[in-house]
Image 1 (cartoon, rainbow, N blue to C red):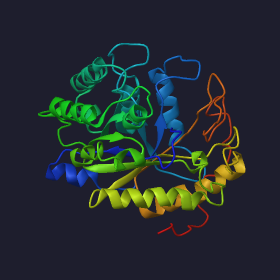
Image 2: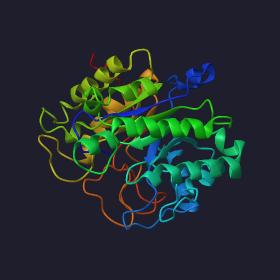
Image 3: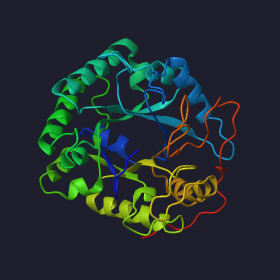
Amino acid sequence: MRFATSVLGLAATAGTAAAAVSAANSGIKGFNYGAFFLNQAAKQQSDFEYEFNRAKTLSGTTGWTSARLYSMIQWGTASDVISAIPAAISTQTTLLLGLWVSGSDQAITNEIAALKAAITQYGSSFTDLVVGISVGSEDLYRDASGEVGLSGQQLINCISQVRSAIAGTALEGVAVGHVDTYDSFLNATNSAVISNIDWLGFDGYPYWEESKPNSIGDAPERFYDGFNKTLALAGDKPVYVTETGWPVSGKTVGQAVPSAENARIYWQDIACSLISRGVNLWWYDLQESQWGQADPDFGIFPAGDLNTVSASYDLSCVSIKPPFQ
């Protein structure tokens, strides 16, 4: 989840006819899943299975059968395959894979090693579940902010390495891409990244956009302003929503007040409108506070046993408001 204004994620597919078909929006619904809990303990296969299965049995809504990951590597290891992969296989959860590429030149090498190992170890049981691969997450934004990130050319190099790594494998025609801020791609230095991707994914958080009116009443306009700018940027490429949500608790940012009531309104206005349009959507998120308290907390469920605690707000879609144009 991201703390910049007008935030978006960009991802891509290989430029084959088969990939172009697979890149089209098809109404995928899922959540973002981190590799570790708030106490820094790595999630194990049983943890991911528990989360994936709970997502499939939500009251008031159905079809949440996809997971977006941020890394291919098991937390705390150099390049072991993340345990979310066998968990996805056992629960038949589709995957938007993520490769974390910032920090050092070794990062992309280790991520590719884990990706190749997963292909070899799990074969089609794994590859048949993959709906896309995201190379990096907000690396351009962090680089421009003086944080640990990547330049546009460095990112393009990573994308090229991933495409080469999956060439000749069952993932050759699968979406390959990147997640970053919308403003980063307006920068001419970074715009070349767009020509190396095949579909775009938008991350939108009106909650963080304190430089603009961002109350819960303003949230649909804030969200769709960024989303529609992304559509224009994408041209004929499909746009997915890879992250969005509203916190149930935390500090007030600008006019944005975290609460279960406001999170419910945001779900109704944003999640339900995206679902009605068949836009691929990965919500942030199912449960953020576990073995610790997130601040702010974007989780639908509070801390505790997912099969015991109740959702913080209603997930049904009562009516659909027309999206801002």
